[in-house]
Length: 584
Image (cartoon, rainbow, N blue to C red; front, side, top):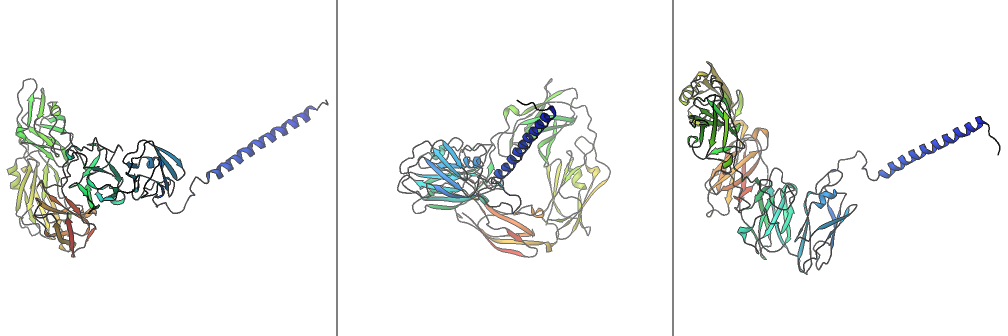
């Protein structure tokens, strides 16, 4: 074998290394280009108009309304790629057909089940509105219903309605057949529904292809997605009555819900703190009301000697309704005290929990030496366009001697004339003044109070100056009116006042206007600020001056209500007439 010179051998080796390096670079670049082309079909091109089209179901197996079906699977095809998990969590089948398995292929999914279908039975498959596409996370606009039968006939019952809520989409509607069960025993927390659907845009829903008979319906924000109502977790809605479908009336429309959150737990006394020797702050976990006057409800005892502390006053402020200030006689700064709240409840009527109605606190060694001051006023200084029905409310940071305040408080108009009115004490730390008659239109008013008339219950006096606030009422030219007719179809059998409300949708009109009528008839809202309003009505059957949402279990119906279908636009100096609303 001939020998190769050393220099020539090195040259050959260098060329070989360069060739291998070029091959590696070519492979890497080629793979990168292929990867880019391979991904081009999966990544949407940049730019273009945003995707606003909701996904739809374009094909099913079995076909809708098919009869005499024998199958062990279903098939769904969507109009675009959808999030698979959202689909799998949004399929509800009535009656249940066992465990579901999903086999995906692009826009199509095959849903397999392990149970044999019942004979002569209509099956309803609801695909809810939680289904979203993969590109823009757009929800389905309405729930899709697929019905098929293993017999010759498809059930034809329909219940349609709406849920009124700030977030009405994607709520669950549970339908329970009442014919085979005792109505009083139905508990949606333990029994799953016979039929299920989901609300779509605007809270609209439809239970289609259901059997004739009597039904109890619930709306629920099913947080755990378990098809059960979980108290204090899920918001709920109940109807004013059960629904019955007959051969003569297989379709019922216009059922509607309002949502509420059930509260079955009583309040808890969270803490007690002594800021000075004559005050105690007690904090609850929620706003509370005392069942009896506070003198019979609150007690404070020295834990060592058992001697009571005299309570002079108790008050809370609207800005912090879960905190109460207790004014006491002088506390011993070296003592430990126990405060007990024996009778109180939350605003749902749940009584305070027995094991959480007491709290220990160490008395403060700080002397109470500050005079009272004004903490809050309902009308800020220099406010304009104040409604004619407004009240002037002053809240103080401490309980005060009432007589001194009443003699010092003065309200005059721009001509210097005193304004007649009624004084009402909300508590020892809060006073309201309401003019009688109402404030004049387009008028400036001045409210004054000598601060040294504020004397707390321990003799501390406010500063020696005069507090002054001015405000101007609205101009009649800025106002309009709403008038029309309300009719209760059950008039003569119904009890309680009819309550009408117009709630503004604009920032300047957020305070609602309310009218109470003894019976059906004409109504008129006067002095309404121009803007857009939603209008509704309910029958206050229990007379508590608030809308009652009912209870899921033990079942209690909600009060009847209706919502006007259109937004009402009020213009200044123009009456809105002909508003007609019906209570069913």
